[in-house]
Amino acid sequence: MPITEQGLSIDKLIDMAGMGKDKRSPMSEQKANENIDVSANANWYDAYGAVNDIKDNSMAHGNLLSRLAEGYEGSDLPVSYPIPYNVTNYFMQGKTAWVSEARPAFNNKPATDAKGTLTQADLILQMGVTDKMLKHSTDRQLYNRIVQMLSKAATTTMESMIINGDTEAGAIGNVNSDDQLPATTFADDGGASYHATLLDHGIRENAVTNSKTYDVSAFDSDDMKTVQALLAERYQARENDLIWLFNPSTYLKAQTDDAFKLAYSTANPTVDGKAGSRLWGIDMVVTDLVPKTEADGKVSATPGNNTLGQFLCVFKPAIRWGFGQDVKFEVERVQGYGFELTLTMEFGFVILDVANTCAMGRDVTI
Image (cartoon, rainbow, N blue to C red; front, side, top):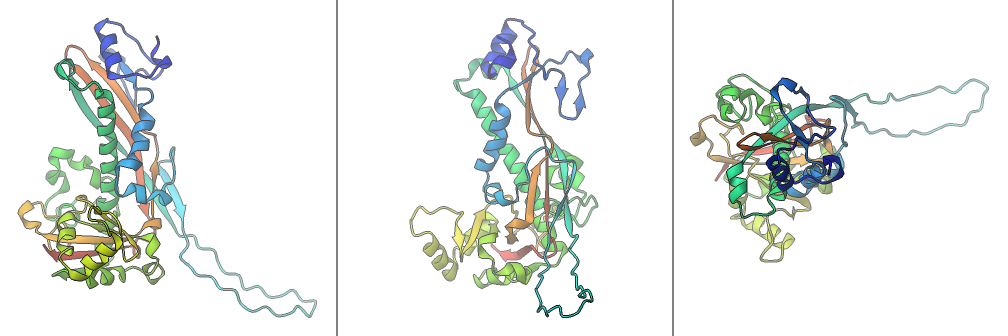
């Protein structure tokens, strides 16, 4: 049966490879943003049906993306996609009667042209599955397991980019590597292609760059309200549209504060209430994607220097995100060895009104 007529599993690929058949789908010799040299004899099989699984699961697996559904701009977006926004309050004024034949005077207010630009980044993840692993694996749902793993990787990458995105390439200034070139710090994770350095103005960078930070030291629940007040007044009290993002160690320290414990137990009356609820009417997520840092809220390239906690307060509707080229999942047979699994996609985000929508509580003693 041709590939285009059935869902394609790892087992089916193994069977086809074992019979020595060369089945090619219409997607053969095609990979995201690349041309396959036919002389390389690379046979590409499109894993039909897996694409939607990976993309759809990204919302289900993550702690953050599922809470940012309002800002999802969709798929097939252009590389550069402008998103207009308006923070101006317009007020009507009194109107007098038109008593003469002269044309009334106009007092037109200009419409704002403020906008943010959602830019796409090309992302790739590759996994090797050996023949030996497949031969001796007792997991009969190996294909589904791999799709789940790739879904989780895609979600983690996107959430980390939104939180930690900073394109500063110099030896100082990047919130993820403040005392060394990011390309050196992340040499084992892609170097200059490290995911958090591909797109600019993530939540943490916005807070630091725009001086929306508060040095907490010993944690007190009142510190959270101080950080919340760093947002522009038009956002401060919109609790339903705000979210707290806590570093795990910082969250555990916060739980030792009596007022925090009271607020948390009120919001989560059951013993098994998990981290990820509403606190003082504001959504809360605890994630290790918010790192431990130095006192300035930036991560040192020396792990031992990152001993302090932080938490973030963000206006959720300001975060807009979406896909350019859709998620694509492909499988290549490496003759004699196994399979190369490749996940590619284009993802982008932008945070609107960056100077007023992100705040950070830093230098938390943990």
